[in-house]
Image 1 (cartoon, helix red, strand yellow):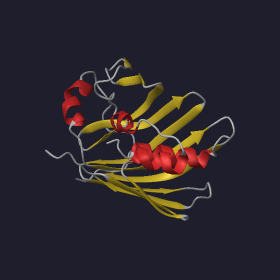
Image 2 (cartoon, rainbow, N blue to C red; image 1 turned 120 degrees about the vertical axis):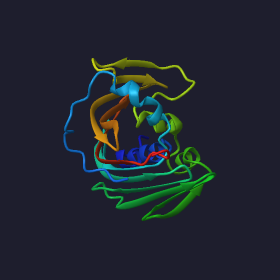
Image 3 (tube, rainbow, N blue to C red; image 1 turned 30 degrees about the vertical axis):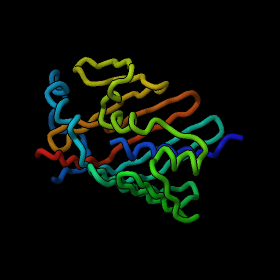
Length: 206
């Protein structure tokens, strides 16, 4: 039996947590992207370990579609995600430190040793959480085969890895970095969109 889209969306948010100063909201940047910008920032982006984002995640399956608001803070040692939306599950808070992850919903508090384990425990399936931590920053997961297409300015346009296709639709400037503002992810008949309304990168070496 297929699981409802709200459960799939919660699973996606669990996966996105591993992913891996002040920044204004994400209106159109003052200066457009230029050729060479991506290569110039790539090392700094790969080292980015502390950040916050606010946005909206949407999910569509053949049976249903849903969306949720997302507030996410990531540090090298701790993450916290607040998920809220109109799909009936109300407010969910996901928090974790090394070796322990908890999910608090209207049904109670649940714990596991990893996001993958928590997803399997609560949903019966899992997602490539480590890879998603790189994808959300515009990077392929390290040490695994992938196919990357770039746009005319050298920025990632489409990434194919682990059976997923990630299309980078738009970018925003925050904290001196170009970061994905709009992404579309697909795996089989599962389609996910992520729109970031605010990025707050806080690079450890800044």
